[in-house]
Image (cartoon, rainbow, N blue to C red; front, side):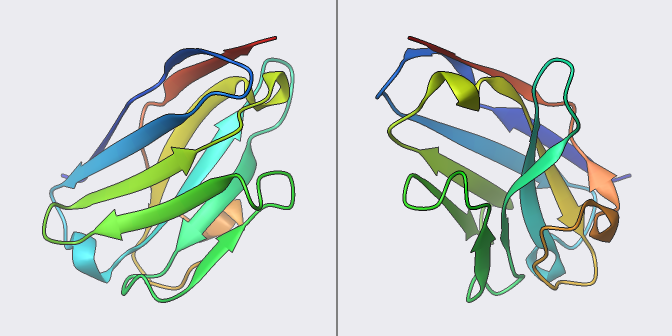
Length: 124
């Protein structure tokens, strides 16, 4: 049974930083592409960033380019999202997701497994 567990969320002031982690178990993490998505109250879930199974290809949403960085450690079965220069509009529940095909994508339909989410709140 595949499990994805996010951690690292919290409350931070605008301009601050957080690093989210997502620990995977129950599958072959090293072969999956991984993604981060977020959902703010009253809004649809949107893609934030994605990374291929090897880590050699990444994609980011325009709204976070230059501020957020996705990375992975296949030895630890963990994917990270480093978030810098946070803004109030980044406030959302952040979810990690796994795509067994291994191809990085910002398309939500490309992901099979999802975590439960971690709350990120940015105060102004």
